[in-house]
Image: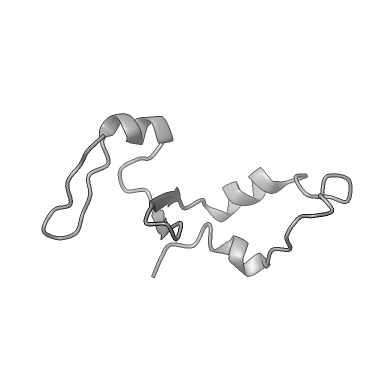
Amino acid sequence: MVTRIDDRGRILIPRDLREKLGLESGQDVRVDTDGHGNIIIHPVLPVEEFLDSMKGVINETTRKDDAEPMDPLDIKLMWEPSP
């Protein structure tokens, strides 16, 4: 899939891809890079939706011994819009 960057730096995400990913007009997204030249677009989740999705995910039984510790402030960035 090929798209073009306009003179204001905007990129049109083709409709098929938006529909496949569930992205909607007016939705906040976070734009990141993976450090290898790839751009990654993450939907910004509302706090309530994020917390609901995480209920019961991590507990003493399911936490892996080799899991990397995560700072709650880093997790919070998933639902905060970019400045």
